[in-house]
Length: 371
Image 1 (cartoon, helix red, strand yellow):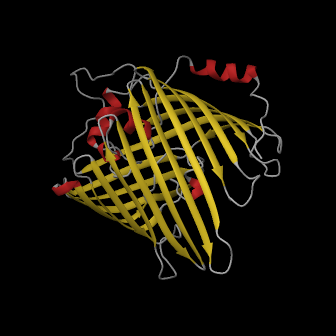
Image 2 (cartoon, rainbow, N blue to C red):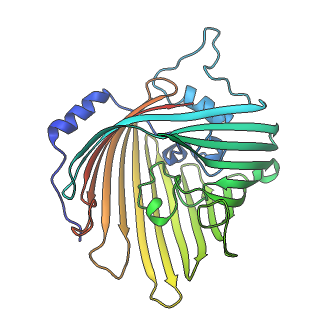
Image 3 (cartoon, rainbow, N blue to C red):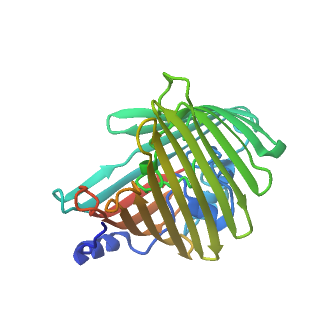
């Protein structure tokens, strides 16, 4: 059962908003709102064809010349960070520092500054435009892990590609927020890369991406079964619609996913949504059906300023009437200059009383450097 709670303390909320000054644009890990607003595919701005990670030459120029409220140039008029599509070596990164505050009925309130994960990207173009090796290193407190590491073979025919190695399997919208109910709770997140092979084509306004991975988020598999994921979409002038699916057999349980997603651009207002169904079917037990949905609205007030609202909903088991959860998020994002983003988000959760943490309220303040 979902119940309503008190709002965040007005003093804390007001102080947080004042810390930012006038408002923002969007996260740069992988931001579907950009795709909805521009009509581009993820491959337009990211080396990873299904979103996230290092930016392409176009993506680098876009973040320097289109996103920020104010442009900065070198004295000779050149871009701050040159973007050469034929360069043998390319690099990039995302550095995040922030503060979060959580009010909970189940635990003591939390207030903490955090040094978020730092992502460092590198690519070697063995044959420019054809063959490359890409790596994505996530550096945290006292540890560094490889999130993605793959070889990429590209073809101009149908804008096709094949990549082999460790990567984020494609599924639905690649939201930058792993906590969204259509991401990690369903088993797909930036924090859960897998090892395998992925191939795709993007002729014109169509795209199709298919991956076969181990299914255990590891570097090797101890059984013969594999996990299959698929994303396909059709883009139009102001909208897109896509289908996504996955199938995995792990032990005695087969899990299948199905989803529908899309976006609509109304000028300064961009809308995107996704709905998903997952069925876990053990051999000798009843199946468990999970339903999840996500909607987001992004309003671009002016260059460099964005207001974002998102609503998440999940029903972990259709056989249980009192386990539904929802989350509402409202945020301002600001990119004053190239490579710099500031943001503040207020989030409220509603969920069953018996599940700790499902009725929390939270404020996130983020300072983000990306290049």
